Length: 230
Image (cartoon, rainbow, N blue to C red; front, side):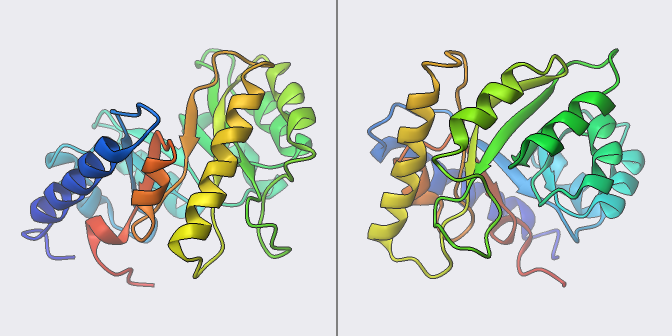
């Protein structure tokens, strides 16, 4: 990454977010940028923080835990955004502020049981398979209400909303349909949990339709740091 380019990239990204939010019909004037920092060094994260970013998303647990430790002098909010295997929950539960990718009750229960009670509840989103692809992680829309009920009963988790990833290569119309589907699902869940408020959707290539459909968080890596190293 060219650190001299970083402030320009972030300013350009913030302008993209602002313009998309202006076009949104859903009143989401404040969209939180989560800088996807997987494969990025602690030095790169420090540079991004110096440009005003405070929320960072990780998918690879061991790499992330090292960075959490190396950067504990900074007031950062850490988001786990990748698929979760059962053997990863013990590392995620105490070290992250948010988890976006809960897709089954077993993982939710383990995160709840392994969250230290002295910490605030873990803020969580349920990952929904909005594209319907067998290869994609995520709970189905049919099974979503039951999973939401389960999570709402866990004292060390706080259900905040939904996360979704559209099919690769989807055109603009399909993106709007997929993201709109997630927005509708959130609205329906608010009868069960009135205070849920988060839609985590949209990445570097599709953030505009996501924001226009109500995204409150976008997960952006390439548009901030440039092409990934691996």
